Image (tube, rainbow, N blue to C red):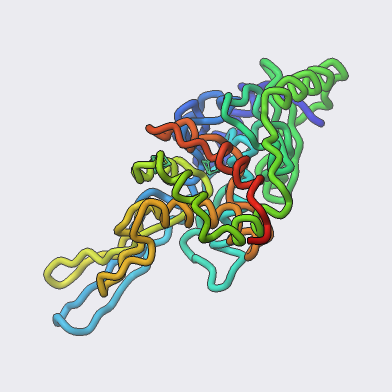
Length: 329
Ligand code: SF4
Ligand code: SF4
C-alpha cells in the first residue's frame, strides 16, 4: 500500500481531468475532500443520467428523416465512490456492456470514467453489503483509497488507474498507517449487517410466484418509486421522441417499474396491473431473474431504499422472510 497527503492527491487529480467528488449528498464537480461514507444519492447518475438526449433528428422536407447521435465524450474522474457504488457499476455493466447488444451511450460514459474508490469509514445504519460477499473496505474500482486522516492510503488496481496516477510520487505506507487501516476496517465491518441470504433464494422466489407472500409484503408500499430512483442498480428507463415542426430530439429518462404506466401496453393491457404485481417484479428481478441471467443479485446492500421509503418498506426484512419460503410448493 502507498500513501499520499490528501491535498496533494486532490491537486494532482484536478490537473488530470473533470473531477467529480462524492459529498454526503452525491457527486458534484468540486475539488473538495471526498466523504468517506455512503452518499444519499448513488453514482448511477454519472453513468446513466437521470435524463439525456440520445439524438437530434431533422425532417427538412417533412418526410425524410436525418439524425445526429449525441454522445457524452467528457473524460471524468469519479473520486470517492464507496465500494457499494463501485459494485453497482459492475452490475450495471452486465446489462449495458456485457450483454449484446451493448448500450453505446452507457459504454462511452463508462469508458471515459475512472473510478477512484474510497473505503467506507462510517457505514450507515441500514448498510448490509456484507450479505453480498464484499464489504466497506473491499478493494474495487481503478484506484482504491483509504482515508486515515490527513493522508490517503493508495492502491492502484487497473491500467486505467495506473494511467491516471502516472507522474504522481507515492511513498510507501508506514507500519503505523497500515495498522490504522486495519483498525478502521474492523470498526467499519462491525457496523455492517449480513442478513444471511440463502444460496437458493432465486429458487425459493420462483417456487412461490403465486404465493400470498407477495400480497402481504406489497401491502405497505404506495408505489411512489422513490426506492427505485435512489437505488444504484435499478435501471428502468423510458425513451421519448419530442417533435417540433421539422425537427426534434430523442430523450431517455429514468423510469420506475413501481409505476402502473411503466408496464402499460398500447392495447390498454397491463401485465402488472396492481401494486402486488409490481412489487413482485422488483424483488424477483433483484433476487431471482438477474441471478438466473447474470449469476449475481441486482442489489448491493446499500440500504438507500430503506432510508427513503415513506412507508418503511424494508427490503432486508423481505429477503429474510423470503429465506423462510418453501422451495417446493
Ligand atoms: S435494492 Fe435497496 S439496498 Fe439493494 S442496491 Fe437498491 S437501494 Fe441498495
Ligand atoms: S419507496 Fe417504499 S412506498 Fe415507494 S415504491 Fe418503494 S417500497 Fe413502495
